[in-house]
Image (cartoon, rainbow, N blue to C red):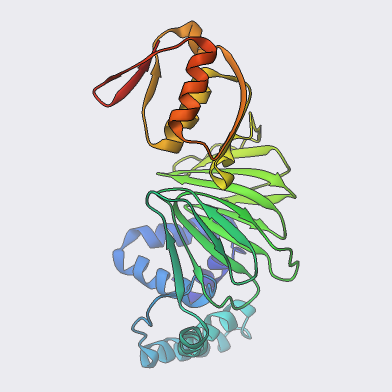
Length: 311
């Protein structure tokens, strides 16, 4: 596999035929995947690495010389050959610089929501059971973040010269300055925009989301991306521990409460599930919220096998 073709794939400028060729090469052999991942780590300075991996500079230089000599016999170097060569020269220098200017920072939550300020002044609220990483000292053109699991609400500081990029699964989210929610669960990625606009890239597809628009993506799906309207504002309840119910079906009310407090609620009566509820709760306990709901609709609750049944 020609290294300049791999570089074109990494930077997103390979056409469909070239992408298919590289992806086929990656899946053919485990060693191919290892080589690809090493090249990507060198190129993608936003992702970085926690440790300096083993780099065989002598072997890399030999490969470069062979590629150079082979190319000059036919035509002058193209920019992809130059880019591939740059991987050799930049590898050690980049990691030394990363070690001095900032290692990878990982944020991981368990039972508590976490608020964090990122190196550029942007903020993120991570919900429970979430994990994301970023570089303490961002270098280069992009401000890279990786959301590995869970959900977070980002308020990004505007900087047109350095786009803010979140990688999650096979999807990439690019913004300049805006606020939005991202959820990563299994192979699924959900993006909801609160303000500004967000560009979402998934494989060969690309869309731009505006406020109150959302998209749900799957790493295993090749279907066309579909933009939907956000049904309510409950997706960001964890930012201020605030629940704003506006004619919300009780089924949806208890879905959100169950997620927020780690409980399982089931409404047995189908008609009760459809009852609309309007109320706002801010930083109140689950017990206080349940008492208000039960009093409004004259409901009762029974626990069976760690499931709360509501009648």
